[in-house]
Amino acid sequence: MVEQICFNTVLLDSAKEIFSTMVFMDLVEITEPDVKIDRALLGSITFKGGLEGCLGICCDVQCARAIAVNMLGMDSDSELTEEGTCDAIGEIVNMIMGGVKSRILKDVGNLEVSIPSVVSGNNLNSLEHKSIRVTIPINIDDKYAAELSLLYRESI
Amino acid sequence: MSKSLMIVDDSATMRKIIMRTVRMSGLEFERTEEAGNGAEAIEKLKTAPVDLVLCDVNMPEMSGLEMVKKIRTELKICEGTKIIMVSTESSQELIDGVIADGANGFITKPFTPEKFQEKLTPFMN
Ligand SMILES: [Mg+2]
Image (cartoon, rainbow over all chains, first blue to last red; front, side, top):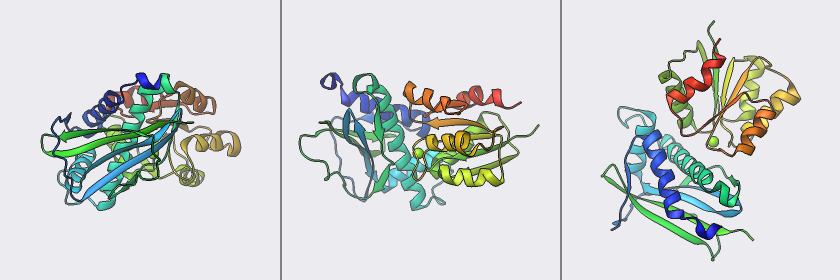
């Protein structure tokens, strides 16, 4: 069953839905990525059940701030704190995961998800090999290069 | 009669978004409270009960599901309080479970002001 799921579509559709309904920003997949993300923030959430793995969104600090500002409907980012930015990215990844979950529910059953965490850098190294990774370079509002990623394996 | 509301979510961003969406839905509350998890919500509800609680599911310390169970079956407080879950969770099993435990409704994230209006209006009288 898992082989038949197009995780690329599932991930992208979920992210697009969240960005259009909760962030009010435009998200598109880009085919020729120029993803050099400096001062990156990585929001990630782990899941277990019929599948286990990690879903993340990685973008630079400026992009993260723009996302937070839009989500909160603020006029500018002058009052946005670092904590507020991280919290917004955590909630983005939480909602994208929710969308992925509901889209694959009938194929893999319910997944239990963690509390999202936001760090700078990469924290995926605790997952072993045999994991399948989907990464989608994206562009937000025609302005920010960012990346969606999904790392998963069938649980044994 | 004016109503009171509590928003329970571990994300401060989400609490703000929910508050804004409530306002956009045209519903008015005379008093609004916030809590970052189920345990904090229960502590606040003990001293200052509210009419309506909008509660996340996935939270550290005490999840929304645990909170509903505790309020409805263990503590048996806030009997007049309606609890509406607001979550990215959307499995029917989970929704049925928490309703059986005593929650009064379920709104899935992402949501719209229209959804809030539809789900909350029945509890405004
Ligand atoms: Mg939460």
